[in-house]
Length: 163
Image 1 (cartoon, rainbow, N blue to C red):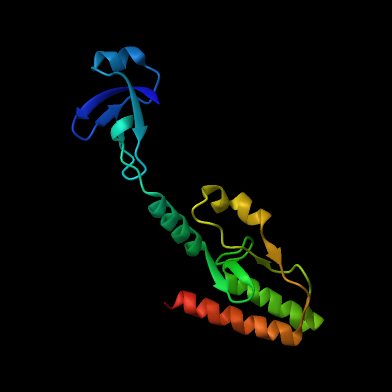
Image 2 (cartoon, helix red, strand yellow; image 1 turned 60 degrees about the vertical axis):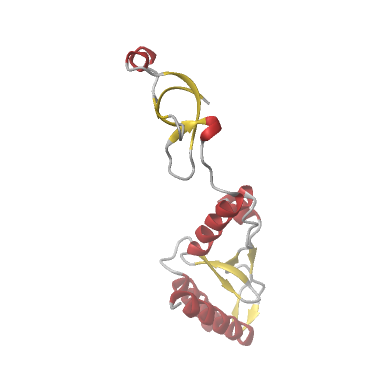
C-alpha cells in the first residue's frame, strides 16, 4: 500500500509511516510515497518487499490457540463455549440445563449449543459467523442420556480447567 514513509533501517526495510492525511507535514519531515506493509509479527511498517510475515503454520497455530481459549471439547458432542452467551460460565449453563431436567424429567431439544472445530488454515472458518452457521443443538435427552452428557461435560470441563 502506498503511504508517506521514511526509511529508518535500510537493511531491514523498517519505516516510519504517516497514517494521516497531512501530506505537507509528511513531506516536511522527509517522508516520501513508498510501497509499505505492516508486519503481522511486530506490527511495524516495512518496505513491502522486506516485510516479515508469519508463516501459514504460525497463523493456523494462533487461530487454534484463540479457539481453544474460548471453547472446550466434550467427547461425542462437540465443542462448547467456556462462557456461553448469557451465562458467566459453561458450568452455569449446565446447571440451568440440570434444573430443566429436574423439573421436566428430560432435557428439551435445542437447549444447548455445540460447535464444530474450524479448519485453522482457513481464516474464514475462524470467525464468529462461521461458528454460528455450523453450530448444532442437542436432541431431546432423557434423564439417563442427560446424566451421561453431564458426566462427559464435567470430565471435559475439569480436564480443561485443571491441566
